[in-house]
Length: 196
Image 1 (tube, helix red, strand yellow):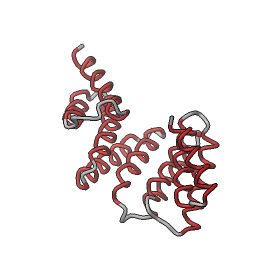
Image 2 (tube, one colour):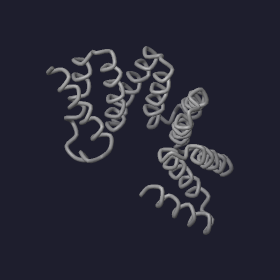
Image 3 (spheres, one colour):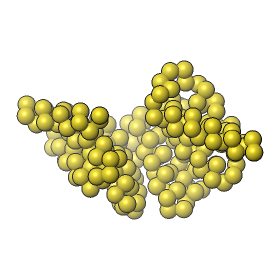
Image 4 (cartoon, one colour):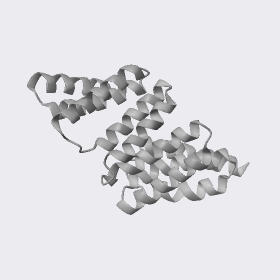
């Protein structure tokens, strides 16, 4: 259970004075709590982690953690705050490319919530292109799933299948991970609807 492990890690880090790992634990616990329906607590913890990162002067992974804050804010129902936060994530350390595709995907999902599907599609496609460029296949999968859902909502089932099927097929292990299970469920749905 992610929440329990993050809580234990946080307690140990605070007890023994490991500020860097304490911040990381706050990020993990905050995101877990947000996804478990306690978004207010999650936002508070992620803010605490970011403040601790700033205090020790590290920027490693900060793009990812600010993106997690945006996710937690979205789960809080604060979409406009989340959009401002994800913009910050994209600006804070632009050289840190490894987390940029996920920040773009999250921005796309937020724009989609606002009904801005063309902007969302642009974000998804940019994220996929960058993820391919840096060899981040997990981000390719996650964002391809997001884009395939958008294409499905437009009744463009063929394009959604053409996009997602080869990405999913490229994975040979980890098929029980959440991203691959989500992609599999969507593919089955797309195939079923296309066959009708």
